[in-house]
Image (cartoon, rainbow, N blue to C red):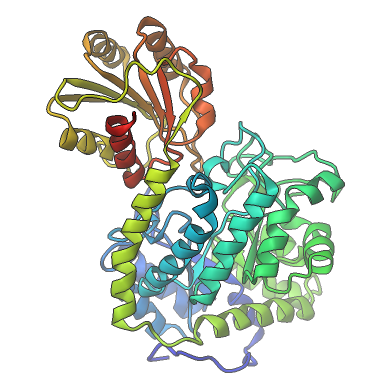
Length: 524
C-alpha cells in the first residue's frame, strides 16, 4: 500500500478469504522461549502477509527498532494492520525504552486521587502507544479481584469492590479513547473469582446469575458505557449463564445474549490468546477451535499458531455451510470500523511526544509512592532503616521468565541509598547451599529486609514456593526485627504474622521497588 493512511474508506468488498484473514491477529516478537525481538520476527511476518493478509499484529518484546519494523510491515501489507499489545503496565511492558507503570491495584491506593490519576495515565499511555506504532491496548482489566487465591488477576485488577473497579475502569477507557488509543475491557464476563489460571486450565465461576450481575458485570458495563472499542473474552466457564459449561469464548449465550443483547455492546469481541489451555484443550486442532469461537460470536481471533491453515479451513466452512457468510460479514464490518477509528487521526506532533515522555515517568513515581502501604500492626522497632548502618536484603522469586534481568532493581536502589548493603536473591533454582548462606546472612544482619515477588504471570505458579515460604516463616520467628515486603499482592503477607513490619508495594516494576526503598528510610 506504500504509505500508512490517516483515514480509511468504508469497508471494501474484499474476497471471502481476505475478509476472514482480517479477523486474525498474529504475534510479532515473543517473551516466551524461544525469545524473539520484534525486529527479529519481521521477516517471518512479512512472509506470512504475502500468503495470508491478516488483520493485525500482537506486539511482544519490542525495543528501539520496533517502530521502524512495524512501519515496514505496514508498507508491504495490502490492508493497514492494526497493532495491539498487552500494555497494562505501560508501553514499557512490551517495548524497552518506554516507562513501566505499577500494576492497576496500586492506583486504588491513591484514594480520592485515583480516578484522576488513572485518567492522566491513560492519556499519557495513549501518546506513548501511538508513538510506538500501537493502536490497541489490551487493557483495562475490568475484573473484580474477589478471590485472594486468584493466580492470574490479583494486582492486575483495580479493586476487590465492583463499584470502585467500575469507576477506575471507566476513567481509563474515557481518557485513552479520547486520546486516540483503542481500549479492551477484559476478561469478560469476569476472571476475578477464580483460583485457576486459564492459561493452563479451564476455571469455573460458580456464582449465581444475580451475583454475577452485582459484581463481575458491573465494571464491564461501565467500560461499555464509557466507550471501550473491544471486549476480550475469558476462557472461563460460567454455569449460571451457560449450563453447558463451555468457556465464555465459545458460548453464544455469553457473547450474543448477554454481551450483545443485554449489555448493548456493538464493538469488537476479541478472544483471549487462543494458545491458552482453557480453550485450546477442548479441540483436536486449531481450525476447529477457531470455527467454534467465531460461530459463538468472537469477531477477532487472537494468537493463532497456524493462521493460514485456519483461514483456509474457515473459507471451506463457509462453502460447506458450517459458517454463514453473514457471521463473517458482521465480524469483518466491526473489525474494519475499528481500523477506521485507529487511522482517522493524524500522527502526533513532536511536542506531544515530548510531553508524554516527560510526564509519564513522574506519574509512575507518584503512583508507586502513593501505593506503598504498611499492613497490620507490627512492633515497628525496625523502621525507619538507618542508611549509615549495614543492611542485609534477601529477595525471593518463585519463578523466572526468559527476559528477567539477573538482578532485580531493588538491589541497585538499596546500594544507591545505603552505605553498606549485602543483597542476595533466592530463586526457583536455588539449592540448599544458597538457602543456608542466606540464613547465615540473616542471622548476623544489623538490619534485615526480606522482600518477595508474588504477582500474577501467565504460565507460572502463583505465590512463594514451599521451601521459600518455610524460609520466610523461620526467619520471622527467629528474629523480631524482620521487615517483610511484598512486591505484589498483600495477601502474601498474611502467612507471616511474626514479621516486625509488613509492607506491600502492590507491584514489582522498577519504580515500585525504588519507592519501597524510599519508604523504608522515611517512615516515621
